[in-house]
Structure formats: structure tokens, C-alpha cells
Amino acid sequence: MPSNAILTLDDKQITLPLIVGTENERALDVRALRDKTGYITFDEGYGNTGSCQSSITYIDGEQGILRYRGYSIEQLAQQSNFIEVAYLIIHGELPTLEQRKQFSGMLTENSPIHSSMEHLFENFPADAHPMAILSAMINSLGCYYPHLATNDHERDVETYYETAAQIISKVRSLAACSFRSSRGLPFIYPRRDLPYCENFLHMMFSEPYHQYVAKPEVAAALNLFLLLHADHEQNCSTSTVRMVASSGANLFASTAAGVCALWGPLHGGANMAVIEMLKSIHAEGDDGTKFVEQAKLGKADKRLMGFGHRVYKNYDPRAKIIKQSFYSALSALKIKDDPLLNIAMRLEEAALKDDYFLSRRLYPNVDFYSGLIMRAIGIPENMFTVMFAIGRMPGWIANWKEVASNPKGRINRPRQIYTGSQKRDFVPIDQRR
Ligand SMILES: CC(C)(COP(=O)(O)OP(=O)(O)OC[C@H]1O[C@@H](n2cnc3c(N)ncnc32)[C@H](O)[C@@H]1OP(=O)(O)O)[C@@H](O)C(=O)NCCC(=O)NCCS
Image: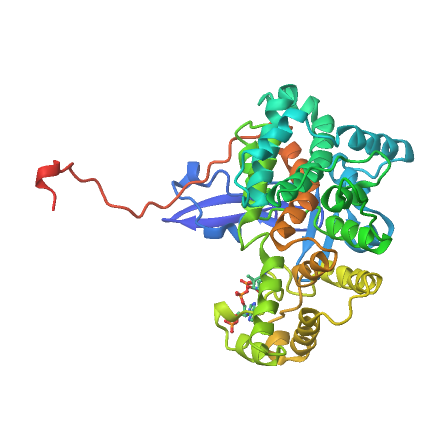
């Protein structure tokens, strides 16, 4: 394979090196392009741009492959759990038994939130969106733990594992508090004896006079949901985290920015859009058949939500896995006659047989099932994106570390093609029309 590419521009030839990743991903290294030629590359939306070199997650969208630190998502889903996978992503290796115990201990120690932080929740309007609260609260953690948020990357990297454990543990408590404050409900303190997902469900749904006990299948479905969302390489929110980190910002500030990026409907909102689509199909008295026909007309507002993916042009590997756990959670919860579920199953069946979807390689993505799972386990719709944020936290944290510990790292600063007015003279206000 050649190690260089020759580019001819304005009768001048320059040599550009090629970079090859461990899975044979190939890139043209254009870092010297502007210096040598005065040209920049233009790639709106960054579809052809590698913004970094990373050793965390590998995706092959054509083959439907997803691996964290080299381990396939299928093996991790079958043999591991969210907390072990979080450790893997954050530390780079699977933990030994001792390391796992120590990590779990750190999560237990760090789960309560500072008592004065609890009062911050009281000052949000009653109907504040939990994503806004979550982002504000994660950023605020830097005020309560200033020694972990110095904005000096060398010092912040030294305390990285402690900060990472703080965030992984506290994001769950903060998420539950943001839900309860949005409902005007009292906060429920974490319990030291419960595993991660059970503890989260307890903080969400227990009452001072009634303990919520999660069914094992429900906790398992939540665990799997979080594991499947733990990282997805350079998506919008992860790129945001890296962008913010590149300025020297601390881990709390950078991951809070990730929450904001995830909030947008084109990113973290798709699982909620699936439920909204199913509700509107149901309200119109359709069983899904009419909607599939409309979706085939190619109108953007009638897309079959939860189908298709920008990267996966084969079955989303996460969708295959979550679909199985979905049915066991439903049977544990004895959910049979949910009209939305029936519509979803009809849509899936129809689309998987239809040439329109098959020829465009549009298969169900993880969001098609994850919204239904969240709904089945009682998570309110405005918390769906919050659940995604809890799951994605290990990936954001590990990506921050790659930026913060890169000795050659530079602030991220893309360029642009200017299309505004050319130079013109200032017009005094009394002469303007
Ligand atoms: C995810 C998504 C944005 C990917 O888009 P993309 O890779 O840019 O694909 P395109 O928008 O170029 O679509 C390719 C073709 O498939 C069609 N298409 C894509 N997704 C479709 C869907 N969900 N329903 C119906 N048609 C769809 C497009 O109309 C286009 O048809 P054409 O070739 O006749 O013009 C898109 O599939 C989508 O909007 N899906 C629904 C939203 C969703 O589930 N998002 C969550 C992603 S995790």
C-alpha cells in the first residue's frame, strides 16, 4: 500500500502522507496543506474528516461492527455489565476482581451529592427540562470539588480516575434528583447495598414510605441499555467534549457540554421521537400500514423514526442485542397489550420485508427499541435523553482523557470559507436606508 498521495494544485504538486489505523482505516494527512498551498479542506458536517486518533472505540458501519477497546459489543453485552464496561472504557483494560471491587467501592462512596447542592435543585422552575438541570449540575460539581477541576490538564489528569468515579456515580444521583425535582417529589438517598442500576431505579421510584424493588429483568434491561450506549466514537456530543477539552477545560465542564450536545433532537432525542411517532400513528387510528406507505414517499417529516443510521448501513449491532432483552423485560413486566408496542412490531415487520427499506439499507437502529424499553420500565419520556447521557458518560470521560493527556494536543480551531460581504466603508446612521 502506498504511504503517500500526490496532490496537484495550481500546477504545483505536493506529497501528503497517508495514515493507517489498526483496523486498516485509511486517511490522508492534510495537516501541512495550508502551509504548503494556502488551501484548506472543506467538509461541512465533517463526514470525511478524521478529527483525532483514538484508541477507545472501533466502528465499521458497513459490516455492523462495534467494539470498545477491542472487545465486541456482542461479547460485552453477553458477559459483562455497564460498570465493568465503564471501567474498561475509562481505564483501557478490563478490571481484575480486586480492581472491580475498588471501582464499585469508589462509586458507592461518591454517590451522595453534597447537601448544599441539593438546594440548587429548588431554584429551577418546576417544569425545567431534566437535561438542562443535569448539564448545569455536572458543571457545578467543579465548584464543589475544585481540586479536581483546576483547568490545568497536567493536574486534572493526575486526579482523572477519582474525577471519573465521581462523575459516573453522581450522574445517576443527579439524574434521579432532576427527575424528582421536576415532579415536586422529595429526594431519595442512594443505598450502599444496591448495585448501580438498582440504586438508580430506587432513587427514581422509591418513596419515603415505600421502597421500590426493581425486578431483575428490569435492572438487566437498564444495565444493557447503558452498556450499549457507553461509547460510539466521534459522534456530535463526544466531538463536543473533545472540542471543549482542547481549550484546557476540566472534566466536569467538558462532560457538561456533552450533555448539551446530546440534548438536540438529531442526536439524543431519536428514542423519544420513536414514541411520539407511535403515539401519533395510534391517535390517527392507523395500525402502522398507512404510515409505512407514507414513509416510502421520502418526505422528511414522515420518516420511519428508529430506522436507518448515518454510520450503520447494515443492521445496527446494538439493535439486535437490545431487541432480545426487550422481550424478556416485557414478559417480566407482563406487558402484552400495549397498543404502541403492537404498532411498533407491525412497523418493524412491514419495513423488514419492504424493498424500499431493504434497497436503501434501512434497518431498525438502537433507538427503535430503546425508547420502548425505557417506556416499559416506567422512565418518563423527558428522561429518555438523560438515560442516554448516563450511558454515554464513560465514553465522554475517556475521550476527555485522550485530549488532556496528549502532549502534542492543540486547541481545536477549524477554519471556514468566508461568504459574507467584501470590505466596505462604514455608513453613518443618518445616511442608512
Ligand atoms: C439516521 C438518518 C438521519 C440517516 O440518514 P442518512 O444516512 O443521511 O440517510 P439519507 O437521509 O441520505 O437517506 C437515504 C435514503 O433513505 C431514505 N430514508 C432514510 N431514513 C429513512 C427513514 N427512517 N424512513 C424512510 N426513509 C428513509 C431517504 O429518504 C433517502 O431516500 P432516497 O435515496 O430515495 O432519497 C436517517 O436514516 C433518519 O432520519 N432516520 C430516522 C431517525 C432516526 O432513527 N435517527 C436515529 C439515528 S441513531
